[in-house]
Image (tube, rainbow, N blue to C red; front, side, top):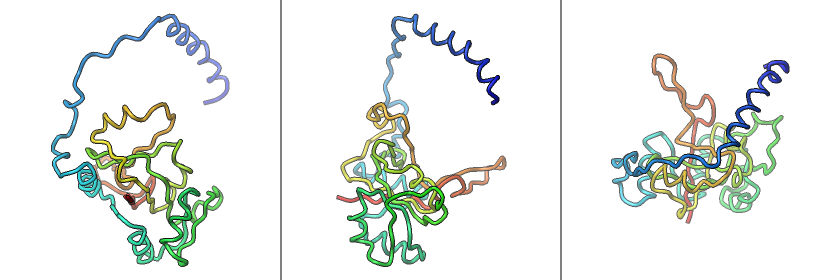
Length: 208
């Protein structure tokens, strides 16, 4: 969009703001039960954590329960360097050992050198197998989106039952990422490809 086009939109946006400002209050939402939009069949696998893990597996996510599991996975794949949230670095370094190096500052110029990224996961949704990443609690969005492997550290107490429950709890954070397995895209023929617009491996590291 050129500057002239942008300026031409200003009167329109100004008129919209004036119209909205004149309204004393917004119309109330209609009464409805959030349960009518819940995938009940996806919540029949035990506890919220068990439901999450089952549904996360269904979308090709990988669940792990110890840093040792992460170390073995990265070592087997010959992955040795990545980005890590500074607040998690000491904990992760102790478990990953000397063969895997962590950078606690994300350098955009070196984005291709990060084989994995470790960030905090705000929450997980049992119904959909989704990890929630809020900017206010995720140290670096690029650290979660650009490496081939993304590891989200999820606390075992941070599970929401449904998507609606998670939305209600998100607050006013302007940027929230919903991660439901590896990144996916499909062409017009419906052929699904993973790892094109983001991580090709999504790991949920659930720790006590």
